[in-house]
Amino acid sequence: MINILPKDKAIESDATLVANQGINYCSQMFSLERAWEDLSAEERYEKRQSELKPLLEKFSDWCSKKSISVLPSGKQGTAFKYCMKHMDKFMNALKDNLSNNRAERAVKEIVMGRKNWLFSQSSTGAKSMAIIMSILETAKQNGLDQFKYINYLLDKLPNELSFSVWNPIHHGLRMFSSTVSKSLIN
Image (tube, rainbow, N blue to C red):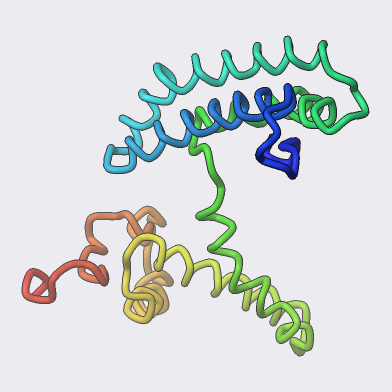
């Protein structure tokens, strides 16, 4: 929606007003998400169903109504067509999160290093590198000390009967937390 704003901000055209309405919907949605940051995953899910879902539905209705009154080939028409085409994907925000920025940042290192890894000795080596990077990034995202976590996996995982104990959020892995005071661990 931001792309349909006219370049000259001084002009209050219909396009600017419509774009501002769209931006306002988005701002409201992201404001709700920010307000829920400290809640548990279950509480955030409930909030998304009770508060975000009606707002997304209202946004969808607004897009549907506005798309009729604009030229389909113009910037507004293109923006509304995109919104309507992908509205089912936007509704996935009700399941997890409104933004995928965290996931995009997580793969940034892999994208940045892709040229360096282009010359892996084999496809198996490249696959192994991807698995290791994924494990390290998962540990990092869960506040674990990556070095201790990977050592734990290499030491314990071959002898485990249940894979649930190596999940980064497992209570037994608190000792690998990089955010927990060292005095609490010992």
